[in-house]
Length: 170
Image (cartoon, rainbow, N blue to C red; front, side, top):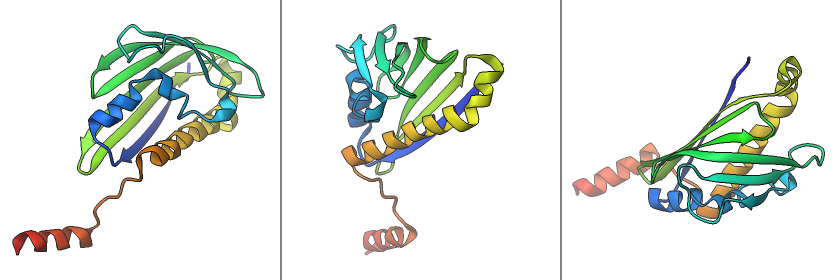
């Protein structure tokens, strides 16, 4: 039984409240999902996220094959994190943790997904050339889309810090 982990981290130049207000609305998932996925919410996205919420989707991840996906929001700590777990769908296990952490100049968002593929050794063989690249592509798309929506995070470089320090001392 092989369990894989995907981790994605992104910094955005927005406050934690704005990040939470976007990410905790299930309907916004469609906005940050590639169009080719044919993502459609069937039910459960009519209110902000809460523990116990069941959300049903249709996705088309590969070769035009429509797949029903049912997730449950199992944990929510408002403004900080939430967890969704697949109840029915394409994975043998899907456990997705979403964290929002305030940092200087914005927020750091971290996704940690633990997942297991169906079909035993066949699923494991498909992982490196089909599943893993597809998941990376989807999360790279999300990063780009979130940057398009909220702007690019710019860290202060050492030169900027020295100038600011000099200005403060004068």
